[in-house]
Length: 103
Image 1 (cartoon, rainbow, N blue to C red):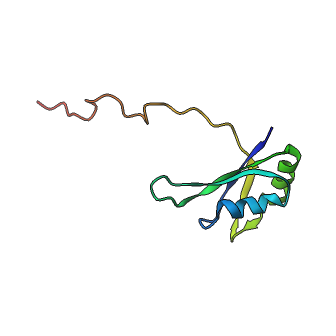
Image 2 (image 1 turned 45 degrees about the vertical axis):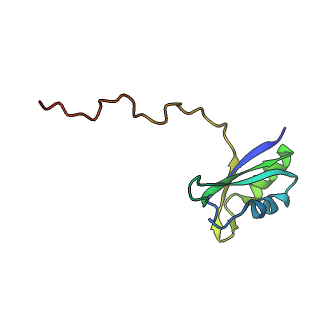
Image 3 (image 1 turned 90 degrees about the horizontal axis):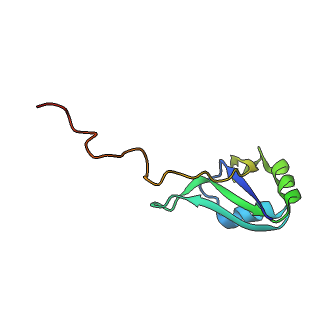
């Protein structure tokens, strides 16, 4: 099973291809994705890399965490599982919460 890595503090110029090339030095990369903003399509400064072998992923973490890549010192660690988010979109419920009580 593939090991998913979180890569933070990326340059806003980093591409999926450059991220993949960086990690390919340490083993087989199944995917490399720089996360982008939905509206502007600009990089959000972090991404995820999936590596086939856990031992290769560990080697990449040891070699790359704290190193400079494209002018930025990056952070690399094993990704945590995604947490479920509330379906209501945030904490603004009801309809009368903003009405004043003046009469």
